[in-house]
Image 1 (cartoon, helix red, strand yellow):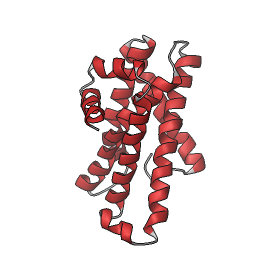
Image 2: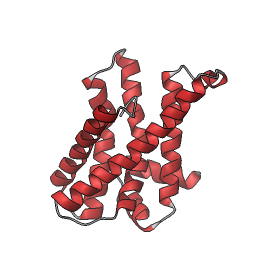
Image 3: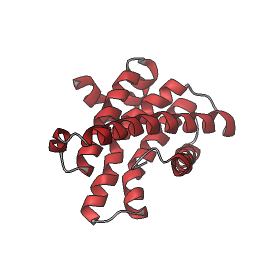
Image 4: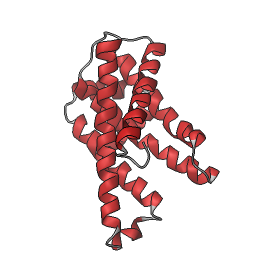
Length: 177
């Protein structure tokens, strides 16, 4: 677990070493899955007042919903970002590497929950505050993986988030995208 958190902190600081490690280390996909699962558990705890709610039988269904929605968001966002880079921008990159970037960036989505708690409301402001760092991390990963200029990589990361919002609006798979 120490290696995961070391690489996660490097990712938060947008250090190139973290993205190189994710690109060349197949194990990073499993590490990314662990971070997505922990984030889903923390989102569940944030919505239901802590982990004590796990002792409530009805909460297990909600926990399963949060875990599955975190997994779906992770897979879907990675796929949309990869498809935009591959077919719209016409650049290279492997889907597995996008999974790793997105997985290591996913815990930053907890900022949306923190912003909602601090501001005592939800809406577009908390969404933007919560997902800004996520988008910047993904853009840095795209910039590294696909050799795109920073502005185009950022545009792809924002476009993938917009695609995720549209798909979520259609299927309603995530309480917080």
